[in-house]
Each structure stands twice: as C-alpha cells, then as structure tokens.
Length: 566
Image 1 (tube, rainbow, N blue to C red):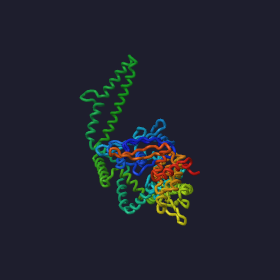
Image 2: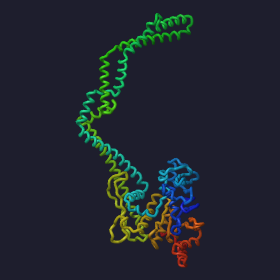
Image 3: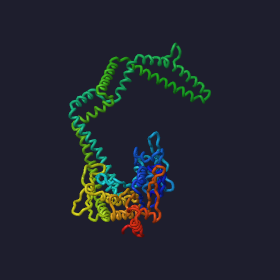
Image 4: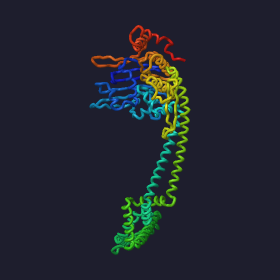
C-alpha cells in the first residue's frame, strides 16, 4: 500500500506532503490544476521519465527537486527485497528520486531506504507495487503482443512455470538450430572447396604432423647440435675437475676420497662422527654418478653434420607450412584432424546427422512446451471472457460480446500464439478486433474492466487510474465508480476524475487547485475530510455553484448512495 508521498520543487509544486489510507481515493480539480502530476511523480519515481522528460519535472527556477514515496510492502515485495539483499526497517519501504541541475543539465539519482538503486532494479520492483493506467494507454489494447501479455498475467502464478518452460525450450532449440545451420553451411562450403580441402589435407598428411610441440623440440635439438663443440669443451672441463684434477692437483673425487678416509679414522675415536662419514660417502657416490652422466652426455655430443642438416630441413618445412596457412603448428595439427573427419567417407554426414537429430529433439521439446502454454492460455481466455463480460455489462454495455482469439504464429520465447481481443457492443454486428470497432468511451470502460480482472492476479498491487472514465457520463460513470469502489475493498485504488458520480463513490477525496502568488503559479492539494467540502467540490464537478448542482452533490453523498451494487 502507498502510505505517503512527498514532493519538493516538482512541476508547479514547491512543497507537498500527503498521507494515504486503504480504500478508494479520488483526486479532483479544474483542468490544468496539476491532478496528473501526482501520478506522473510516482511514474518517475519507479523508473519512468528519463532524460529530458525527467528534467522537465523540475520546478522552474529550482536547482534541486525531490520525489519521495513510502509503502507498506506486501509479501512479494519483501521476497524481492530479500533476493536483492535490501534491508528495511519497521516494515516500511521508502523510495526517493533526487534531481540536481548543474550548468543547465539535470541529473537524478534513485534510492531505496537510502541505498542507491539502479533503474533496471526499479523496473523489476515497479509491477510489485503499482499498476498505473494513464490517458492514452487504451492504445495498448490494439497491440497483439500486449494482449498476449495481459492474458498471461490474468492466468496468474500457474502460468509462470509454463512461460519459463516455453522460453527455455525455445532457447534450447535455437542453439541446436544454429549449430545445424552452421554445419549445413559448412557442408555447402565444403562441397565447393572440396578439391582445395583435399589438397590441403594431402599437404598436411605429407608433412607427417604428429606432435603439436615438435617445433619446440626440434629447436632444442638444433641448439644442442649447433653448439656441440662448445658443449664438449664444457664436459671436458667438468670431467677434468671432477676426475682428473688440474695442474697436478688432486681431483674433486680424490679430495672427497681423502675426506672419507679421515672421517673413518675419526669415527674410530668418536662414534658421533659416523653420520658425517656417511654423508661424505653419499656425496662421493653422487659425484661419481655425475661424472658417469657427463661422460655419456659428452659421447652423444659427437659432431653429426648430417643429423643437423636433416633437423634444420624439417624445421624449415614446418615454418613454411605455418607461413603458408597463417597458423601455428598446434593449429595445423587440429586442422589436419578436422579435415580427416570431414573428408573421410561418411565422416561429415555422420556429424550432420547427429546435429539434425539434436535439432529435431529440441524442436519436439519446444513444441511440447508451447502446446502446454497454449492450453493454459486457452483455459485462461475462457475465464477472462466470462469475467470481462460480467464487468462490462453494468457499464452501459448490456449487449456487449467479447472473445479472446488464439491463433498459431511463429514460435518465439513467448510461445507460438497470437492473441487478439475481439469485441462488439452492438447487436447483430460480428466480433472484430477491439481497436478497430470500439469507441473512445468503450475503450475506457474495457480497460477498466480488464484491469479489474487482472487485479485478481496481483492482489497486493496498488491501482492508479488517470481519468479512466474519460468519454463517459451519467449512469455509465456511476457504474464505473461502483466498480472502482468494489475493487478497492480488496486493494488500494486511486483515480483522477472529472466525474461527480465517480468522486462520490470514493472513501477519500483530495482536491487539487491552482493559485497565483506574486506572479508565480502554485499547485496545492488538500484533503476534503468533511461532507460540506466534498459537496462543494462535487457541485463544481457537476456544473458549478448553482442550487441545482448543490442539491445534486448532496444527494450523491447520501448514506448508501455511494455503495457498490451487490
């Protein structure tokens, strides 16, 4: 429920603070007084009025503006807040939007309980809080896509799993269909380029590419062979120091052997030296093994010009392949393997057949999910037809007929149904698309009846109507007021109206007026709490401050007059 609204420097309002209660609330006043600005402010607060549209809400001459609204959040909103990791205190949700004008440019920021919130999150939160029906929204009634979304919304929570399953199945099929399409394009291209591909595979097979790391391995081997003389010199120096000694001096092994003998003699005198002797023996053994390994390594370093030439020839072959095809060796190996599969008898055909089977399976899942969704829509359509007719007939449409036509269309994430609302208000006339045959007044009544039916699917959402009764008068506006009153027994309802019969049905009445002070126009909003004030406002709506208008207004507020019909 919307519990409060505060505006600062918004449109013609310098400062305004309002508190709201449950039930049916109307806003009345002369044309141009600013009645719709309250609904525009809520729209802007919940993600609307972006860019220049939002900047125009800022009061002329002001550098800052603010819209703030408080809500008592219902269960779905609390669940959303928990999911988004927002915390609330005292079970109150406070949304605000601040504008700031700098160097001729306006910027704004949204907050939820003081924490910055993005527009995408606001647009998720919005349908959980408010359903705003503004002037011109009747144009949406002519859009088939919007009619389908309304039908799904009317179907309620049971429809959501069907919608999600249909969307998931369609996306799965889309992936499988794209893979199949790519494979078929590859097949067509392969047929055109088969000769070139076969020659390419022949070249790669002739190169005997087996090891993707062969180039690196050959480089290491080439370096070893190319520097064989220097490496042999190094081996001789090492062996000389380890085994033979230098300049008549003992070798490293000789020194270690003497050290071992000395440690043995010391161990005979002190047993604690034994571990040192063992360590010396281990070191001697390790160095002896190192010497043997060096001898083997040196033997393998014998100059082999023929092997070096063969190795360099192989490296040149691999480099030429890489330059020719613009690929490195691992990529060439992968290309060779892929061409083997594609060009092998039946190889590409087998891969294509597997993709065709996967696409067919995904298409069956898609069609099954769409069929289940269509069945759910058909059941919801029958219920919507009955409820809409029940709501429309008391509003001066006794002979109205309405049907929901569901026809097959191209599959998409939203199913495979085209939904059209068919309507006629005149006996003997065939059903036709709503937007083509309904008058402005009939469209307003239809939209109110539709929103009344949709309200059952969103029992916690506050409903706001901006002159939903436009184009109607007399008994019809009274029926619309009674419907709004009945609707407000289950939820909070707001309506901007010029109709006295609608205003008289309200539980709470606010008057919007315009004054001029020091040449500046101001909009003021006051709540009409007593019967006399309401009678005066209803008389104004009924035609002016005449005796007849005052008597009519008083009759509208007689006890029991504003109650909805049973």
